[in-house]
Image (cartoon, rainbow over all chains, first blue to last red; front, side, top):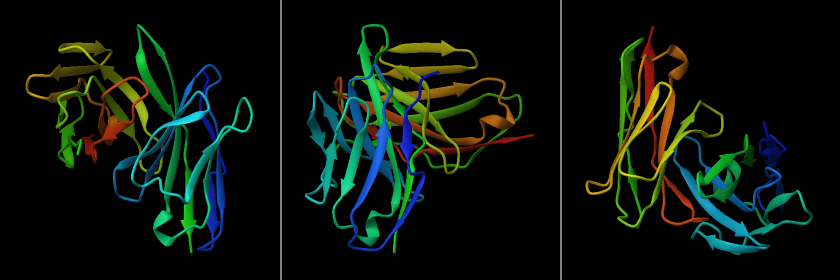
Length: 116
Length: 111
């Protein structure tokens, strides 16, 4: 069964460093998302991406964040200058739309980011 | 501010019994609703989605939606120890819109 994959599974970085989190969405999906989950808290939306542009972003997704689909398969989240509070699990999700299933988002396994 | 509210639990249910999980949402424009299961340290796994009023059954799971009351529920019949997890309720307003998650209800199935 097709699935969303993410790399790396864990990332440790120093505050102020740049990180790039990578995702490979399910191949026939057209909509892509990033969410984050701080330990013990709820899953929070960051950004959605469709047709090579951002569809919507949350207030969390400030100028330090960017997303890119550099080729036909990868979808990346870049944090330019990490802060301690960026430590969280980052989930990539992708979805398609059809009349029967409407729009259903499938999540990747996540990247656990720790900022020291 | 769009909100999805869930009782955080833990909800303890004997093995073989019915587990009932509830959720309310604030945005009356929400159209699609999802139940995800999340094991500790893992990603959310889609269990069911529902967008029409009434019940939707899939195996041991039944989702119920009442848009007038802005209420969604998930019933798990014949609960198994492997059902022990956090169950996330989520709402989506439009196609390709973000999903708003609740904080989740921790379910513990007692063997």
